[in-house]
Amino acid sequence: MASVDYVLGEDEVDRERPSRGPFALAMRRLLRKKIAVAALIFIGVFYFCGLFAPVVAPHSFTDQDLDAVLQGPSLAHPLGTDKLGRDLMSRVIWASRTTVVVTVATLVTGGLVLAVGLGLLAGYVGGRVDTAIMRLGDVFFALPGLPMLIMINATLGGRIRGMGWLQAMEDGLRINGFPDYVVVFGALSLFAWVGGARLIRSQVLALRETEYVTAAKAMGASTARIIVHHLLPNVANIVIVSLSVSLGAIAGTEIALSWFGVGVQPPNPSFGVMLYEGGNIRTLQANPHLLLVPGAVVAGLIFSFNLLGDALTDVLTPHAR
Amino acid sequence: MQGLLPYLVRRLLWVPVILLAVSFIAFAITRFGPGDPVRVAMGQYSDPVVLERVRHEEGLDKPLLQQYGIYVKNLAHGKLGESFTYRNRDVSEVIFPKIWVSARLGLVAMLIVFAVGVPLGVFAALRQGTWADPLSISTLLVFQSIPVLISVPLMQIVLVLKLHWLPAAGWGGILDTHIVMPALAISLPGIAGVARLTRATMLSVLREDYVRTARAKGLGEFTVITRHVVRNSLLPLVTVVGISLATLVEGAFFAEMLLGVPGIGQLAFQAVNGRDYNIILALILILTTTFIIASIAIDIAYTIIDPRVRYERREIG
Image (cartoon, rainbow over all chains, first blue to last red; front, side, top):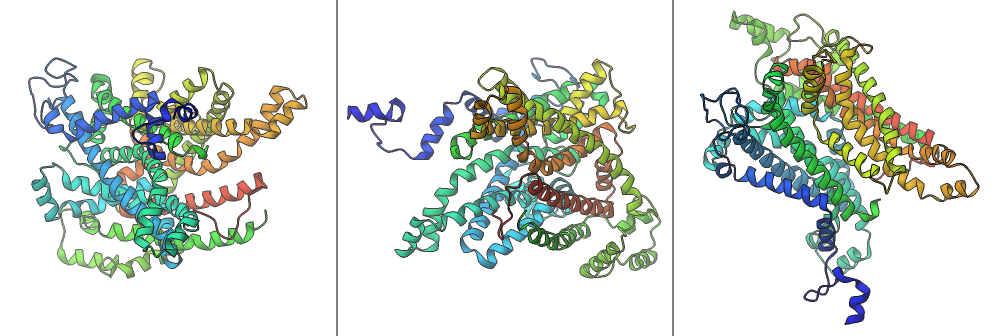
């Protein structure tokens, strides 16, 4: 009907699917922001390179070209080489694989499974369960994050790395440094859930009292059904926003831990290790590219995460401002 | 300030519980660490009999819970234990001079954060709709996105190696050029955060009715902004003092290491590498206590500054 088209305006009309969910609308609004799209593209390229590092990287992260040590950019090595003659571009690509694995794993375990699970449980079940989860959260929240992470990795890291089945998985999955990844993201997840769980709990507390949940209960819906069909869709936006805002911090913390020497261990590639090697004053004077190359990639990634987080906040929680 | 006192009592009662839990977690983790401190201390001349005796004297052969009990008992007497790497020196002896350095650095950084961040945010908000607003805000986001690990070496390249303006590293108190780089490095992310928050609250306050009223009754624009808008925009900033404190501490860990500032960041790095768990444990406990006290102080400050705030029986979240 023409009159309806006129009222809705051009881009809200879709003839094939008459109704569109609020989420799809929000994604449309996101894609209309040029800055957000640029950030998404950077993140996409980064994750693609990281996931397919064995294919994308021209060399292995341990390959040495001893005739070309500490060189600047050239045709053979587009971003130069380090002091062991390793191709810097390949090192960066392999290091992004570390960031990819750690951010995704932390997001899934700490950001989704633990945060959503515990937040829903605390908010919906309430009572003693709520108190127990929230007080546990208080304790984790009170612990100073970075020093604790450093200590956990320094003390328990060795034990976890030494576990036989992790080594077996490293060989089985062909991911170099798999035990390192587990140590880092395990420790990160332990602290990553508190903020998200609190947020979700407070949402669920309000949602629990809504009419549609009461109606569903009256019709005999099971707890699982209420959680999956009525609560989860309504907290999804907030979950996405809080996850996207925390991504930069997660990536940054892995890099910080590896820089400190308690995260991913050399020769396995990590931006933290590269920044450490490139960051002392003599190297800065003689070969600044050893710091500038990984530094630019890391800053670009965190900047993109922050831009995306801002944009998603605008798009998904319009009433928050 | 109705309801503040009972709220405060509940918060304060909760403090020792959290501290106990935190200290137990941290303590248990240190006891699972690799390397036996006694063996490390004995060096290569380790005699199994002596080893056992020293371990017994230090109480390291007791069950974990009993060891923790002894630690807490010592803690209650103000004893943080003996440092493993600084032989025969108490942890507090090692730690407090370092804290003094870090605290001064952090204070200077905190001052920079608010002294620069607030005016920047006010400026951006007043220029909304012009090019200056998005430019300043996105520039700030760039600064917020550069980890201290990268910003410090960048500053060293520019300020030390190219321009020769500043010494490369070291520490000489707060009235010394050595403080410029670490203070700048750890305050940059905070400046950006404070400026963005100030801008956001300024924009919402600018839309308030009382601002329109102030303009309508003929007040000058300068008076409206300074007396009505800015003062009301500063309230939410009180809450971020705590968050920026945490950011400063994390930044300080790396800035101190990179720039040779003899503070707790450098100490933590040495302690981790030297497996000096008593020092790390003490650092974690001191930091936790500081954060808890800071957050309670902020809550109190908030009710005093903004009489609209009430603490109900059950806080949400």
